[in-house]
Image (cartoon, rainbow, N blue to C red):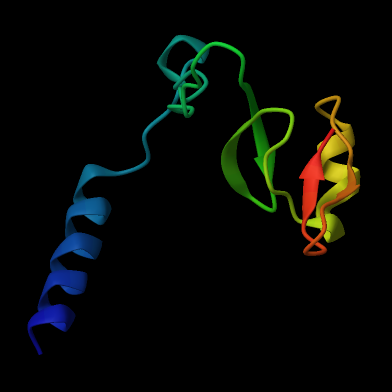
Length: 87
């Protein structure tokens, strides 16, 4: 019941305020997004929707190899255990 009252109050406030005209100066600008900062020698990347700091020799997901290509890396090298590493 509490949620319903809040929704009714919000709708009433919008109805009382009336339509608001937006001028070009009143439109919000682009929203700044905080990106993960990477140390020296690392490259910032977004792999499978997650922010990563990449460096040659790190473990990688072979199925995301095409995404690594965007940042100049390849996920092809396999070690003795069969794990993939960035090259």
